[in-house]
Length: 256
Image 1: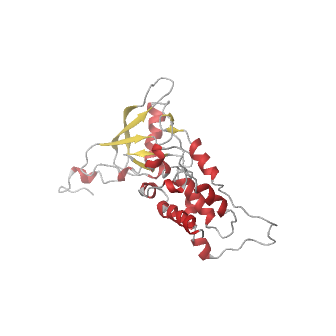
Image 2 (image 1 turned 180 degrees about the vertical axis):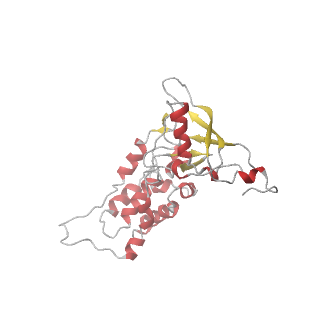
Image 3 (image 1 turned 30 degrees about the vertical axis):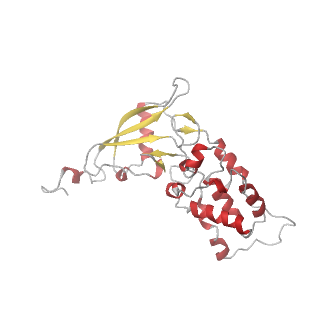
């Protein structure tokens, strides 16, 4: 309930109070544009809206040519990764109340495609190089010999060694936040190394040596400069830099 002593900004705290937000989006259409350019849109919103809702509004009611990836809208598929106010995030996991100006002033949110991958149209980037690196580290269980006659049992302690890296949703937030990847697209990138870690340290897997040989390449794990950008960017809270360092140690000491 608003009282006479409350400031105008205090009334905005009501989750259902309509507000207007300006989305400043980096647009690019290869059919008509020679380079990307910024366009701004005033969009109605509520504090409980996700940024993804506002992007849908732009596409549905303002400009149907606006392109961006999306799928599950629940932070599981990783499709809607983009730069939001200069930070890699998932649009479906960002609430407006976390982006609004604290003094009640009109809010402008900048949105751009993730870096390091070629922009195909608007926020839509070419993910092929990202997935090529992912496939190169053999992201699947490798075993040799006869199939077991019973389920492959694993202790909780063994599971704990790689549990964190099983959370990866391949959104590319980490890889596209890496300055090494920006400057050298041939680097495997954090996401590929994280997924290699997931199997290298899995006690049921027998392909660790193969993956370590792959990552020992000049464009592999040694290109990491430990800037922690990847860890900060991960929407799943994975300790990405820690995982990369564990792979480095496995190579140095020849021991998983």
